[in-house]
Amino acid sequence: MAVMKRLRDNTHIILWSLLVLFVLSMTIGGLVGGADITDLFSSKKKLQGKAGIVNSNEFDGMQYSQLVQNQLEQYRENGQEITESIVERVTDQVWKSFISETLISEEIKRLGLQATDWEIYEYLMQYPPEFLINQEAFQTDGQFDRQKYIQALTNPQSDEWLGVEQYLRGLLPFQKIRYLIENLPAVSDAAIQEEYIKTKVPFTVETLFFPFSLVVADSVDVSKTEIETYYKENRDDYFVQETRELDYVYFELKPTAEDSLSRYELVTDLKNRIEKGESFETVAAEYTEDPSGKNSGGDLGWFDQNQMVAPFTKAAFALNKGGISDPVLTQFGYHLIKVEDKRTQNGQAQVKARHILLKITSGPETLDNVRSKSSLFAFDASDIGFEAAADSHNIEIKSTGKINKNNSYIPGFGSFKRAIQFAFSDNPVGTISELLGADNGYAIFKLAAVNPDYYRPLDEVSESVKSTLMTNKRTGNLENIANQTFNDLKSDGDFKSIAISVSGIKYDIHNDVMLSRPLKGISRSDVITGTLLALKDGQFSQPIQVGNQYVIVKRLSASKIDEKDYGVEKEMIRDRLLKRAKTDYYNSWLAEMETDAKVIDNRDNMY
Image (cartoon, rainbow, N blue to C red; front, top):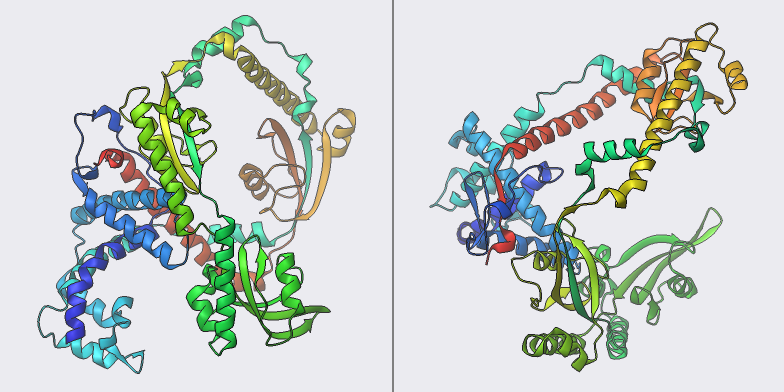
């Protein structure tokens, strides 16, 4: 039972990660509601060491940080470089997962859906968790041995199953409540038939389309009084949130000639090792920086001369079967290519190959040099001032321009949430940031300006207001034309004649179209689809608004349902619609709880 003891000792490390991944897998979308932290905290009143609060449940900062690091480590293990955008994505995922887990846990408690001892035992008997299946203690000749597993489960030696029990005691209620919520929606036979008709039954449709250009701009006029009235009634539309401006210097991290030479020498050394007898697959699994090749020994499968970049293709197709290339340089880095087979398929030459990719990245020495330069600048900036330090180091100062608190994008950097956090922290103008690592270098920022929120004045937005009013008037006039046309159609319903008599109206006939696709020349509209389903052959609709334009549709005919095909498709359609309905219902339920929750995001102020 030594292995089981190790399992017992280490289980707690994976429990939170597994639970977070489970909640993430259940949840689509982000935080819907929450409290404004600025209303609750000042620089003197922070929740030290807490990532945040959901209702009365605190999220410990150390636990939050550990979960983030666990997620980032998974990226690293998959050979992915950790960038600022990935860090931002992971931190938000962990935080949103905590919100979801907390709210669901509260609902589990309210509904009394906690896992019983018997449920945990039955689950372990029927569905051994993956992390137990892979344990050496439960394997024979590298395969899961169910008899060993059952023997250990039914004859515990001590408390070795305690951690697993805790894990399932947390997991099973989540599964139960999801099962409960997802089984509330149902799909009717009528909905299934409608979905089949939309995707499999051809319709023939006539349309009269009323383009926005039918009402020329010169035909409408907007008065000064109308502009002033609209501005007063819609003043909130012209509210501008507080913005801030940052000055910054940037130390770009880019590979040097020495870095490129180092990678070339390494890939050459790898070729020598392979030629001396080492397996290409084994070396590829250890060294390749192509994530898709880590677990496949660099396998690329079959490809033709149009599927790879030119230098790679030229080298691969020049090799004989079994041949290994010299180092090949592409925009992705240095490649070592081994051709395993050749063939001609559909008249095209193809090769089956493996490769090892070594990206040309900045080496430790380059990284140290850039970090040293940026650190020295940061020290000087805090000592003699930002501008003086930039002048002394002969570095250009750049500006972000005005940035919004809700943005994550910084011009010149891309996604850079930590810079936004610094900009909107509780610091006076002139404050200099610490050294911040960006995706490809280091940056130091200075808070240059704070621009208070305000309402854009009328004289600044009058042209925009005028344009909006003109669009509304033109759309209204177009609606009148469409309604008049509809009234004229009541006598005979002749679309083609009407289009000829009224200049600018566009007539079209759409033969054998599927309602799941947009009609030619008309934006997709669920209203159009629903209308055509409701009409009978020969009937036409009232004007339907599509954006700023209108259309009248006439259903000429619809093919009969192929009952045999419908019988084959029916249950597959039901399954597809039911899965969609379950997911939508579950996420709507969760979003509603999040809207009503009291959420405080304190991650920016943890330490």
